[in-house]
Image 1 (spheres, rainbow, N blue to C red):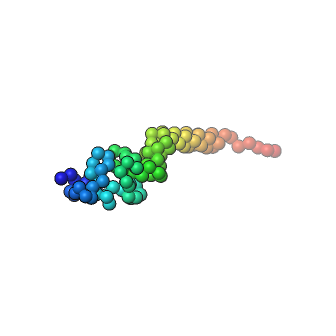
Image 2: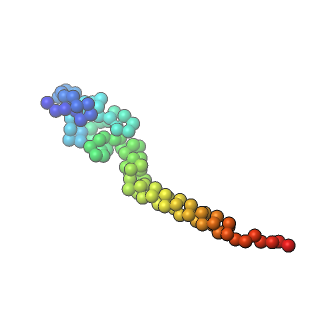
Image 3: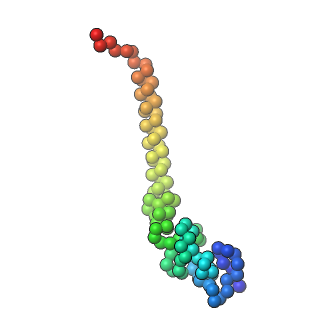
Length: 105
């Protein structure tokens, strides 16, 4: 008897939903993010876990999603730019301190 990948209990024929190559209990086939009950064939999968197509999968793994490569690169770029700005500000503060005072008279 197959076991449900979510609850690890036996799945009986009358109650099974087959999706992602596994047999699930109807109540266990849910989106990993929002817990919406899913129907076989009408959802996305990431690393063997089910997600509703909209909005969860796209928000997490689509272009610009939380775990997409584009998002990670963008975060790294933003962090690098912030570091550069911080260095420029620090160097400008040092330059301002080292300049002699200008007399206006």
